[in-house]
Image (cartoon, helix red, strand yellow):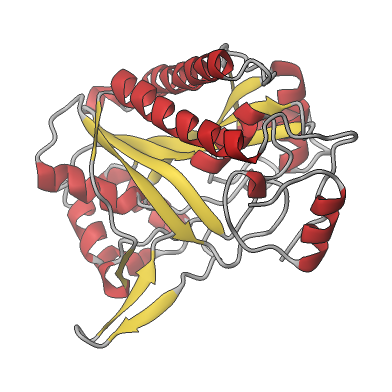
Length: 336
């Protein structure tokens, strides 16, 4: 699938091809340093694929098809990961991480059913992170504390980038506005979910939109979320206003993870009771895994936001349809 690409009027890249590559490396290295320090995270290696029978692959909104292949040497089918939300929680237990400590890793995925437009690609690159918490941390105030820390790391990275490349003009607001999806629906009842996000971010510039997954009073969820990693009452997405694209840009999806009670409730609500017998779910329902908070932070999206790019293809190498390639060439959008 693809949407029509948005072409900003008079767009011209701020950096040449070589400085673009250098800036991408600078952003990734600097942000890893900033956010791993503020959240007390250690880097670990992560899988590109998992076995289908493990139940470790994330189902995202529930409709995306994983890229699958057989592995004759072990007689099982494998799937390219969609994200690492479940794997990270097992890794925290395996490596013996204690409360207040966590991990992060580079996550690369193929989402073949993804829409293709200025901010969506079938190639996904993000920092996946997960941190051990206590039962007392499972509340909105702790969630907000972590969100503010991540936003601070993002803004610090952007400030350091501007010292290196003063020709870049992206300005990010460090003050986070918090709003629930039900509050958004009440504010903008006649808008779609994405229209609500744009309306709110146009005014507030940086926001954390909370409580995604459950049905709102309209009978529809703001967006779909898998029932077995985030607690739908304690999750959300970090958005920044993107002046170049004139829209809200989601940078991170994150949340306090389900405990046994939340998992039990959400599996029933999502009609996914068949997952209860998968190894990961059995461990979680039996309280054998640590309580955690975690999420993913888009690497390419962060780069395009800070560098003022008009298309995600300017900061990552992927595949695009012929029309998109032609339109981008005609409007100074340099796809890698």
